[in-house]
Image 1 (cartoon, rainbow, N blue to C red):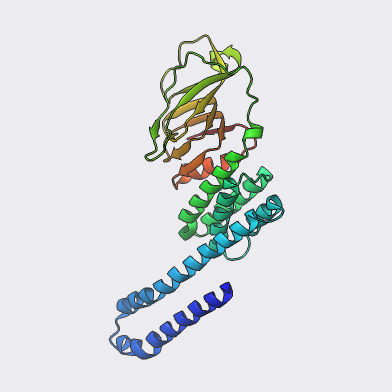
Image 2 (image 1 turned 30 degrees about the vertical axis):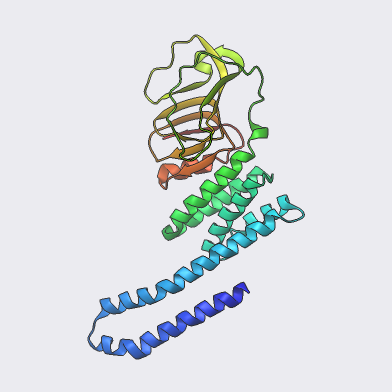
Length: 287
């Protein structure tokens, strides 16, 4: 069915081009109007490209739904993600995004190393063909969001969770339309010297004047956007947030993202951050 639809679109596009090249274009060629010819060809190809893109999206969605609902979803999701690096690049980029989204929604567990390998492969696709870069960035965000659902088992154990005297500076904003929007703050783990414990301040600001502090902070940002740009964060677990990064200066040290959604904009530092999000331990990154 999919191959038939693709065939019809391709044949229609070829007939369109044949007509223009051999019936309409000769008179224009005589006039030596090359720019107009190029514009006409681009205009004629555009509907074909749009149709192919729509077919790619539908195919990617079908693959994702099939993998997520199979008898062995972990195996099927793994296979679908690895297969996304093969064949036609744009189909693979879109497939990886749809598969990651479907697996994230159903909390299907796979080996996190698979996500790291697929992430690296997708990024290479973007480097080789810059026209794919925007789509690659979206797919890497989806993979990072999926990865954050698998991080719960890899985060530090929640021992001695307690309220502590916080001095933190979180850049956050409420997401419109969310029924619940809140920032919850707790301390966790042993009490340690301040320079070895949790920290969440604006980059460039002096640290709080505490002698000791909790080893970790837990920042629950349900229904909130948390902006990383301009922040200096250490030993913090951020959960249930939409994480945004626009490519500005930031310092992250041993950070855990749990059940978060990522909106990282395209850029050089964004590329590095996206790959660091697949780390098997706490994330460290600076820009």
